[in-house]
Figure 1 (spheres, rainbow, N blue to C red):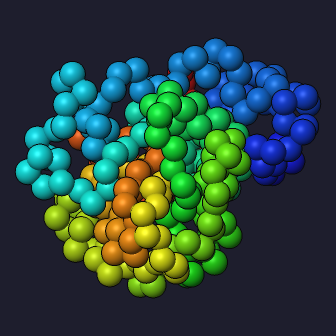
Figure 2: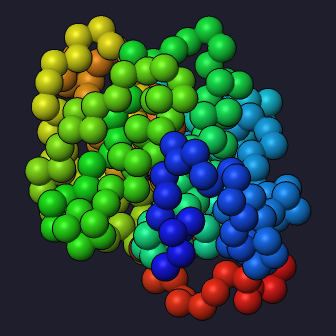
Length: 256
């Protein structure tokens, strides 16, 4: 694996030394060349203010009206669509940490654009179970959270929330089954009276996991919980949003 694939976004070298664009293979000064970066599925319009699903005129969607999640608002940088889905999977499952800067910078920019008058007090990553953490070697949400908290000048607590129960993968489950699957999976390590807490994760699909996390944080005293995610999957994108194995082929072999 190239050294550029494992450097954090705080490295002073990532923006100076050239590397191959992860998607098309041309020489670049970042993980993506300018052309591929422009082609990413950035969120172009405001969605439901609660879950960030596509919604008319930034109104609360029907799902959140009928069964509100425990988090209060959601901010995402991208839609979970090609080729962003492949990049997230490369980061998460193939340890392509060179993509961390791309994701953290995009999400931090989206947060700044949507929270001009409201700043979180604390950033907490969605935790992995110990077994999953040992297998993967890193928590992708913790790396994102640390970089975003630093960029925004917000306190970061890597172990502010704990995963106390192993859960089967959420792939293929509907929202009701996902809620049941993660029930009781989290615990909070501290009291949070009156705090506005932001929970960071890579992808939101139905929002079940983040809702369970938010419920635990509010039981610990949090007054408000925001969900900050790199990508939000639409209804058509949910089936491939979590747990897919990534083909071990170079990304620059993908047809654009």
